[in-house]
Length: 54
Image: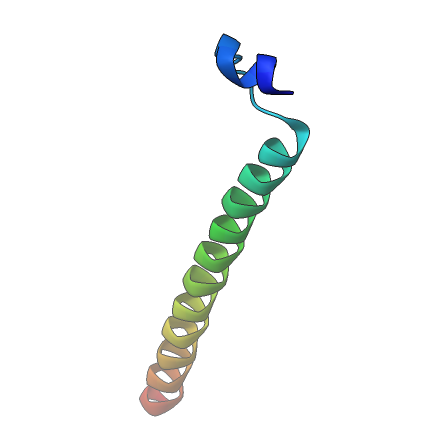
């Protein structure tokens, strides 16, 4: 183990890939949820405007 650390093996381990993927996926989910919430509020405002026109 110590020899690997000293040799400078710069490759990522499986755990590091999993953690990285989880961070990317979590960020993507938060972004999509935020965008969806904004879209829903805009559609609700549009429906309210259309109901006010009638």
